[in-house]
Image 1 (cartoon, rainbow, N blue to C red):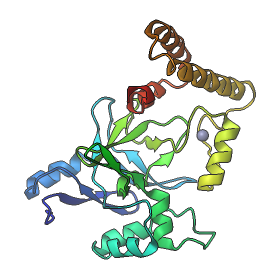
Image 2: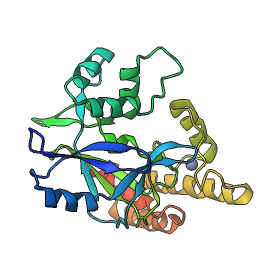
Image 3: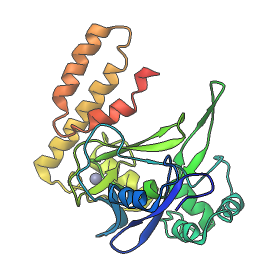
Image 4: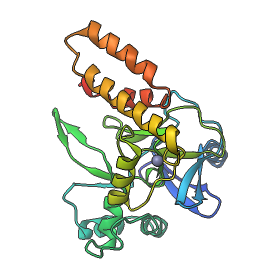
Length: 275
Ligand SMILES: [Zn+2]
């Protein structure tokens, strides 16, 4: 079904609900092409045990090019209010409003933040707009991105492309059909206790991913490796004027990423020394 702006809106069928997603770049398609497009949707919305809703790979998702791009349902300045959120939602369909209010709200128990603003703050993604070498700070609401749960060994990275004005999803490793798609909500190089404290404080849940549930020596080794990776990574970033030393540090760092091979991909997309 084509929208007025020429984008395609369609439903991704999940195990228990439908998620309306605004497909960003496609022209208006005829019925046959819509069917093809639905067959190519790379994930489903699904109930995840102990987590609520999440995204699950519908087919093999390989590393490399973005496997999905998403345009924001709407954006707001960082100083947005509950009124501006509700005003924006009034411009959208009933289905989209219903989907918005079904998203998680980490401010729900405090009652100090009204629901619309609480949901937006919980799920919004920074999506700055570049204007004459100056970034205008904006926050965007993306239905698919909002369903990505957290893991301390994430398999997905999402990156805002300010030129194309879309959020691009990358696989950090090959993801098999049925596997949950997860990003990291925080710095994965912190220790397990630091990560758990931060996740509890900011998002109100205790992470039970495969790394956080390690015990004894295995957990100690995981924390040690992550600390070593962080130290080498920080040292590497101070070597921009000493490339030979930087290469030595990079070599040490690469030997350290035993546990986090996907972390090299995270750094590729968030490289602080390249700007
Ligand atoms: Zn974890």
